[in-house]
Every structure is written in C-alpha cells, then in structure tokens.
Length: 135
Image 1 (spheres, one colour):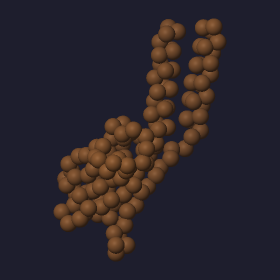
Image 2 (spheres, rainbow, N blue to C red; image 1 turned 90 degrees about the vertical axis):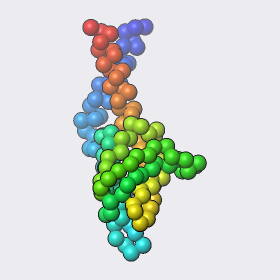
Image 3 (cartoon, rainbow, N blue to C red; image 1 turned 45 degrees about the vertical axis):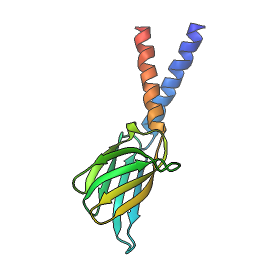
Image 4 (spheres, one colour; image 1 turned 180 degrees about the vertical axis):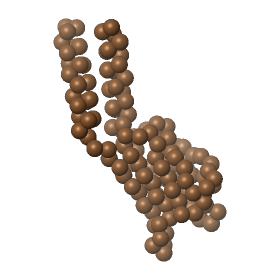
C-alpha cells in the first residue's frame, strides 16, 4: 500500500514538474482609462510571481482591495509616488475591486487573483516532504 501511494505521489510530482517547464508564464495586464481616454492606472500580473505591479499616471497616497460582495476592504496600504507592488499571497483566489486614491480622484478597477500559483506551491511543498521522508 505504501509503495502504491508513493508511486502515485511521485508520478503527480513528475507530471507537475514537467508541465511547468512547458508552461509559458501568463501575464495579465489590466488598464483603466479616465473619462478623456487617457490611461489612469495599469496593473501587471505575472501568474508565476507573488507580486502584482501597480502603476498610475498620477501619484497616489493609498489603495484598497475590496471584496466585491460586501465592499469591505480585504487589504489596504499607504503609498507615495506612482508605483507599488501588491503581495498576492495575502489574498485568497477570486475577483476583487481595487480602489486607488489620488489627491484629486479615486480610480476603480477589477482584478483577479489566480489559485494556480498557490496550488503549484502546495504541490512543491508536498514533493519536498515526500523526498525528505524517503531520505
């Protein structure tokens, strides 16, 4: 029974490892425009990274990530300047509303956090545990 379970785990780890080498990184770009058509905010999200890059045409002093069902902040941070990075590990997989606050206005955009990155990390941790168990 142990051999069967171990064989299945090793096979899954091998499949996931092989699939990752063939998988191209998925890079998503969210662009929010102002009423005049100019770009107000750009969010660049590489699914293989834990950080999402946020850039604004204007300096902003804070941003909030809101649950779309309750409009309650899930994550918020102060900022200085036109750029920042958002740590996606602090968010559960799903769709959120992002509010960016400048001195003159508030910019709102929808963002999606993927679960695939967290799933890959969990599988890697299981593989390490199996290798440590074999040693």
